[in-house]
Amino acid sequence: MDLKPTIGIETHIELNTNTKMFCRCKVVDTDEPNISLCPTCIGLPGALPVPNGKAIEYITLLSLATGCTITRKGMFHRKNYFYPDLPKNYQISQFDLPVGESGKLEIILDGKKDSVEIERVHMEEDTGKSTHSGTGRIDSATSTALDFNRSGVPLVEIVTKPVIESAKEAVAYIEELRQLSIDLNISEGKLEKGNLRFDANISVAPDDSNELGTKVEIKNMNSLRSLERAIDYEISRQTKAYLDGEEIIQETRHWDEAKELTSSMRSKEGSADYRYFSDPDLPNMILSEIFIEDIKNKLPKLPSEIRNDLMETGLDLDQANILGKSDNWIRDLYFDVFDSTKEHSTTYNWITGELQGQMRKLDINFPPEWFSADLLSEILGLIKDNKISFTSGKTILSEVLQKNISIDEVATNNDLYQENNEEKIVELVKNVINDSEDVVQRIKEGEDKLVGFLVGQVIKNSGGSVNPGIAKELLSKELDL
Ligand SMILES: [Zn+2]
Figure 1 (cartoon, protein in one colour):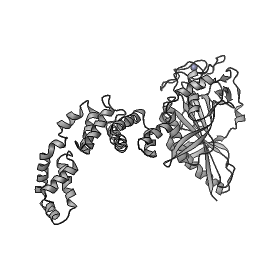
Figure 2 (cartoon, rainbow, N blue to C red; figure 1 turned 90 degrees about the horizontal axis):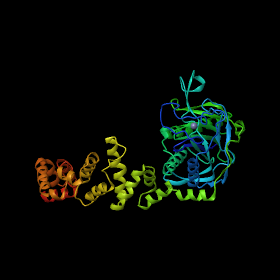
Figure 3 (cartoon, rainbow, N blue to C red; figure 1 turned 90 degrees about the vertical axis):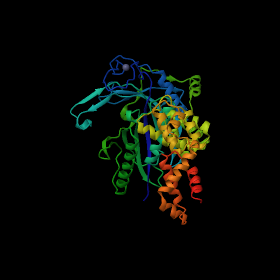
């Protein structure tokens, strides 16, 4: 029997607002614990929450960007549960009236455009951070350290419909959502910092069944690698259980990165377990038509639109997707260099290959301030006009990345201009011919292929500054071919 997996993803995005969701404490990025707290975010009695307007703007932006319908009259609810990192014993969240509903996000899967349906986008607050001693799991810890800096930081939760069919699709979805949050400038989008964290609901059912199987939730992952491996593991675990006739229990499981398996955490709560009720401290949230219009006008170019712009320059979907998910400066650099070279392929290859490769070697994340699109365009132009070789172009790029020096200076100092070198090339050619009597003999006997070897020698002896075409031409002339 063929089984099909069905996956739904819940993603929490930490917003990059200056202050927390319901108080004016600063959102801080530090390891020093408990330096940004107040009675509201540590749940002292009598403290009253006031919603953060910026966070409401951001969630509206995200809802509009994912094509959601905006709920004009929203509401905050209390989600009640006890855990040491939640000092109020409830989390302020949204229940039946989320900010956004019924949207869709374009993703790129296997080199094709696809989309994932979004069920809802709602606002909530983060909890504190608990660090358990020993293995890091609460059940075996003898002590737990609590840091409330994160308590009350605004979180947006985006819930997909159960429509994702593979781990790969889940990863493509998160990559797109991450890029969207960066382009909307509502989050840093740094997975390693936990800016995005995701839960996956996974079930398997017979291929021809219209009903979903029993779902298992894997909680709190923050890397694409964990997400992909946890989903793959869970699909095969459930498939095996199903085929062996074992019952699949609705539960929450934990992905153990070291052991590469999921293990049971607790039986899954239903929403009734959380005793949701509307927060009496917070009034209804009315989003006016004017407010929504205003946010619509603030929408920047979305990743899908940037991808289309990139494809209009001639790139294919995969290249556009890779560049589209690169840092802003890389995309800008591409558009600027393309504007002057009009060569999409060369520009793409130099930026994603040579430039980024050299920067990795130099261990820098950004090019130095003197580096510009004009500089790279000039290098590419010199290569195109045969004024320098491809290899010299690389040398020049490396020099201008390391010091504030003009291209002309590097080329002159290193004798990289090809057009000035004709006499020198003839000399190099003659030297190579003299040093390779055997090869020359064999060429004269008809082994034409060996000309390429001699061309290689000329280029090598020139330190890469000779144009292969010119070298071949002069070599043929010298050998009377
Ligand atoms: Zn506070």
